[in-house]
Amino acid sequence: MSLRRNVFSYAVIIPFTIVLAFPFFWMFVTSLKSETQVFDPTKTWNFHPSLHAYGYLFHHTKYVTWIENSCFVGLLVVLITLAVALPAGYALARLSGRVGRTLGIAIFLTYLVPPTLLFLPLSRVVAQYLHLSDRLWALVVVYPSFTIPFAIWLLMGFFKTIPQELEDAALVDGCSRFGSLVRIVLPISLPGILTVVIFTFSLVLNEFVYAITFISSSANRTVAVGVYTDLIRGDLYDWPGIMAAILIPSIPLALIYNAFLNRFITGFTGGAFR
Amino acid sequence: MATAVAARGSRRHRLRYVAERRGVLATLLVSPAVIFITALVGVPLGLAVYLAFTDSQAGSLGGKWVGLGNFRRILNDSVFRGALWHTAEMTLITQAIVVVCAGLLAHALVHTFRGRWLFRFLILLPWAAPLSLTVVGFLWFFDPQASIWNWFLVKAHVVGPFNKPSWLGTPNLAMASIVTVQAWRTIPFATVIFLAGISSIPQEVDDASAIDGATGLKKFWYVSLPLQLPIALVAILFGIIFTATDMIVPYVLTQGGPFNSTQMITTWSYIQGINAGNLGEGAAIAMFLIPVLAFVSVAMLVFARRAEVT
Image (cartoon, rainbow over all chains, first blue to last red; front, side, top):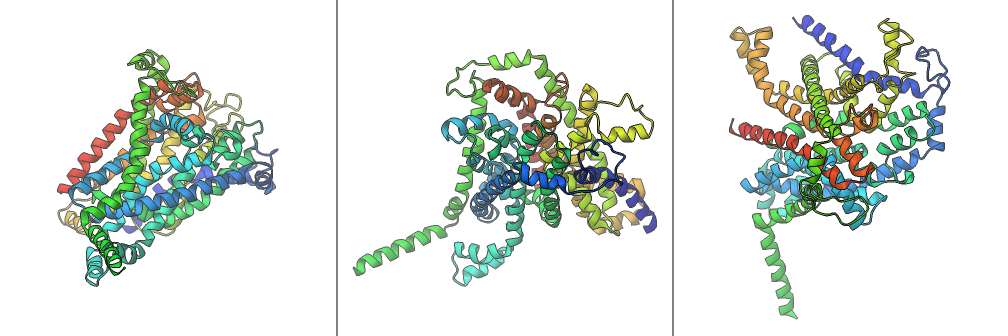
């Protein structure tokens, strides 16, 4: 029985894994090739691997600037998101009844509103009212619109798992409600906060629609857009370099994602659905 | 002096007292979020609806109210009607593939076995890596000269070396390519959610159904499937939103081409609104995403209420 089960597992998992992960394998192989061998798929194993593409990427393109831009926006958005979502998530999980529940669901529904619906009006707001066209600050202002609802939703789920009794004990011991939040709840929910930091950062790294709409000069691009607009649509098609540019942010992100996967799932399915 | 100190003290005391009241503190904690979301989602959403009824151009402040003019114009445009159809086609086919594949994969992954961690990492890669970057990678896999798929197909003698398919240059193949990338991207997400659903079924249910003689497919159909359905529904609803409102895959792969055969609501709205500068018309096109949004929102609410009752 268990043998049959294992055979079934492997028979399904191995082909799927190959299909899902193959593009990354092929990107990796391509990134190590020299440009003359790129168009010859037969040279899968017998070619001279070189890190030439990586060197080119770092020294002759704006790739490092784009990574820096993404990190700059990412860090600021993480700070704004935490500052707004932590108190809200806590309040919605704890301090309110029916109103809080409705509000929680309303905030969740705003997470479903896609950038593709809002980028046109926001482009006008950014250009004409905020005067932030082609500035990274435009992204810092706009990105919390999707990171905050998501973060509140995740945090609400985490705070609900912390027993009320812990806080009551702190209150009895003479702590204020705010004090109990800072001294009791926050330290316990540190893993939850870390999850929010990681997913907020990765959402920012991923964002494409706003970044391509608001930013027009290549020095101000984020990595998600720069690789497409400058490396693909530019004159040079340096495929090994492009593959390297894709892999460098993807692999660390995937590793961290895996470590926090279980919390992420509770975020999506738990919360109010529990 | 002494009274001033006392007054300050009592004011602070009063402030603390007010802050201790549940309603007040909750309002204080929630209001920044509500203000932020209203300003960045609510107001732009309203503005989007308003723009859809004006002839606003990019770069100018004004824009006259034109009533249903934009909608009349775009509905008469065969490219837009095509975009509606393509969006529905892409979303539905992608979700069908995703449900079948993720269902299978989740059932295989639920047991513990050797190397599970590595497999999970590899399976999750397409979801964890930034989509706008990996789609650029697919541009290379679909490249007419160097496509790795073509190389496989030629090796397998499915196509001859001189009539290799041009993946992104042929209408039907371009659509198939987009659906493939969308499914590739969404399967990992659906799998982990499905997996959570399967794992949440308590062992007792398994035991009870075994005692009652339910095995194999029967058990799956009458016991496991109904119990997993709610969580699977969450994955499907999210998947519909992700796919229908996505602009990255079609925009990077084909920009709606060849001959607008893969034009989506999102790409067409971008092309009309930003590239052509017709903000009003672009906003009117994007309005057609709202029914999808409304459908998914209502479904989620109904589902949340049902989950609450049981």
